Image (cartoon, rainbow, N blue to C red; front, top):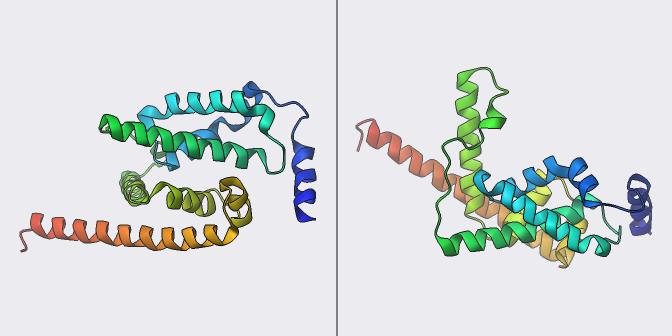
Length: 196
């Protein structure tokens, strides 16, 4: 019963016939942010976003409105980002990060805040990069995008229990990655400071 009510609510806010230009106009920031959170380097975002829009164009008729449009789009981003990451690994490219995240830091006025925000973003990216794609996707969808476990299960085509399991495992792996990063940084600081 809840599913049909959610579908009815979703249908109220979406026009009968969707088109890619309109989807892009209304969701470009969401798509960009989702791809970035899934580990697509900033330098590759325009190309990967273009690929997402091509997939949306090809699959637009398959959108059944049983979930929110943003959830459907997130699923496409998830698959395209995973493909982009695999191909990047095969090419063994290193991301160029000299100006990474510059746009998000401009809003901050205090240089100390800028440095802290840059460091926090770097730590988040490094910790997320340690997760396998399935766990990363669930963690990003639940914690950063605010998508519920039932909706994630529908989107990924897995049982809800699997989502809970992946989420729990992803949280644990994420915290372990942060602890390893902290430990390395403490060792580096001690070495630089002249302590053994």
